[in-house]
Image 1 (spheres, rainbow over the protein chains, first blue to last red):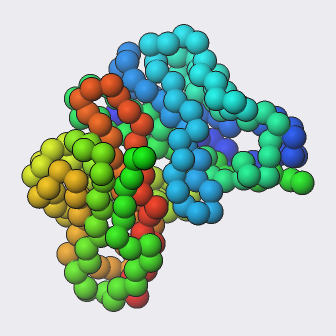
Image 2 (cartoon, each protein chain N blue to C red; image 1 turned 30 degrees about the vertical axis):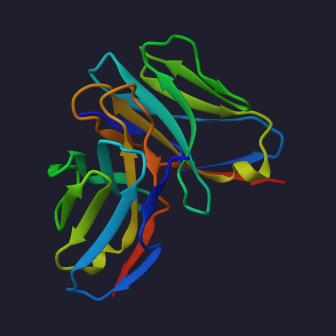
Length: 115
Length: 114
């Protein structure tokens, strides 16, 4: 069965600095999708970034980028120039691209931004 | 814009009550999901549905059932609510098959069972 592991329950970063959130996953599939979601205090789950496993190039969305290492089954999120609004829970998620479309989430990392 | 709506933001129920959590999506998505979110445990899948009247158990289905009579609506049912079902419940939907999309979430229902 697929699993997603986020090993850092909490992290803190100084405003304007860079922080990296870790995520590893376990799967026997070769084709899948990976996501990072942000959940601010409003509770709304917001998609931050997505990565298709067949793409070697790391996805980037403005200040957010990923380091996707398929062989190592690692999918870390880098936030550059951290802002106070980045404070939230961050969840890593895995989705199969075939059959039942089950989506699996990690336990989350709470990110604090220090002014 | 894509929208997933959960009928209640906060809900307080008594032990033993039958509880319905409703979720509606307006995107014509085939797949719908119910997750439970607890501190330190992340999101855990309760049930998902890939078509009308079709459902599959997730990782923690015990004490829950679901209903999907129409494509846009997916209901989570607690047959006899217990205090250990106090939690945040999140509904999500995705389009499938077709180009894989990311899950779209509702705003969550915080359920308290007393």
